Length: 593
Image (cartoon, rainbow, N blue to C red):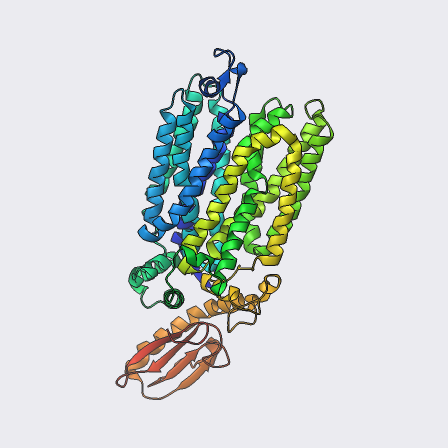
């Protein structure tokens, strides 16, 4: 049974669970991102892998910018490769099995890191292999969530990926606080080793979730796709083949896939201008690149080092504060992206983030923060306010868009290209940040401030508003020559005057459903004793005779305006021998299903 109804549509328990389980891939991503900042400052790790003047005293040990850059950034190189390979794996094996394989790869990388004792290159290689798994997961998880989530909750459920990333970062920071005081290699190996738990949880959980209905249909498994949709909606499996909601969504998926089968999808197809495919490929790559260029990972990768340099006595605590702000505010991001759409939050978020990065850079440049406590405090506050904006807009928003912007035929490959762009910039920033900060110090913040302004402009001029639409309708919107990005919020599918009308009609249809089902069963029950002919058009319970005997009847339950009026309509039509009845369900445009 459905857990609840939203905008007139049933939502099952599985719909929520699949988003949470798959989002564990984001937790793995966040945990691996958050741990390295603290590990680089741990005494035992520095004694083993840094350059020391006295190998008995950790304070004499320092990482060269090349060595620290490689240890941090080789994860990103791995994720770049993993994101590209992940598309092929997800298309070949299916979304769920692909995630299992990717978790195993990540665990191999962690094992390599744990078996390193004095060779920093082994740690870097282990992070590279872990990155292969993380990168592939970062491509597969948002795609799986977007393809399985009900339209009414797609934004919120897809955004849980970013929520779990922030949760992983915060947990890594917190564990780092607890392990840093341990003696010997336990201080950093325990922090790394605990990362093995989370891919195990993902493997166990995803094995109990349904496969993507769109992937199943694309591979000729429509019956299994119907079963998967039924589980997502909370509809009993035995009713999957006859349920109106299941059939309506299945028909939409099949029709879209049939239209796309006329063209064989390869990597080169991602760069063809037809159907706005090239446009969307470049848009996705640009948005993922700009997410990295917001500057968030400047704080997540090197935050402890940054705040240590401004004179903060315990930079580990500062990292906890930033991680807490990031995690807490991402909950707000789930609401913001669902309530206000995609474009508006990203534009406002880009402007907000730019302002606080400008304050951060100006404060650090105006005075020496190590000699002025107020300057250090201002920099921490401005960093927290920057993270607040990022966590509610650009953090979750970009991952939502990657899941819902591309057509089914090339979605995996375009998503991989976009995610690879994210990881390319992730690597460049991770590797070159030590060099850049050594040269221009806190003026680096001005660069990120400008990038945030650029991001707001890209969203305004190029991004279409995709909230409240099915993935197939998003594709139709991008291919409508009359629709422009800045007017896209007013675009609605055929048969609806606006998106508000779409939502309200869906709600109204669900409100009528209990009455329609009751009348349908009553008339069917009376069908064997029908002696008269009654034709009725009803818009409410009072419009149908309470005790009418009906034979060979045509009973229509729906909106005024006839069977072609938008909304879910139910009718009984005469079929077969006298007394025989068939149910005819109509979708939102009056088509029999």
